[in-house]
Length: 204
Image (cartoon, rainbow, N blue to C red; front, top):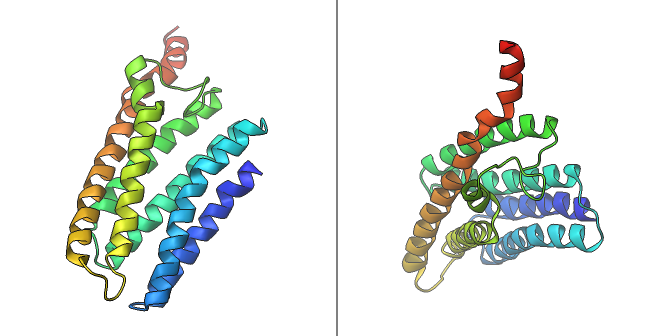
């Protein structure tokens, strides 16, 4: 069930994007897209809860969760850049960070580590806090959701205070992309520890 939810949220996200692209300027379509967007991000927390509740935690589930996050998040960044609502720099940063961290995490998975949890690849307490603590994960998620929701809301036709909402959406997008980069740094800085044993064996 948890894995199904992880995949289902991707479908919900594509429904939202389809409505925005295919029905520009249509009030009802943008309202529906906004609802789908909120649902897509709400389901991100549901899949984890279901996995813990029914003891469905697995490395596959962790991979699907990360995959879903990447697809949903990057799709919205790309959408906003294509629509001219945000600079292209936002998706470029998010996608580059995703490729780097996910490549490193793939190597970690081969050695039995996961991105988060008891088998996390992070070694230091600071790295564990930045990458896996509830505070950092929730802060990043909230800033990202607020950015995406506000950016879409601002484009609803005839909406009062649209300019103010647009500015708020932009600054939450800046905060979200900063969190995105910061949470990726420990993965890069500690990547060398994954290959220490191999290097020692090679030297021997």
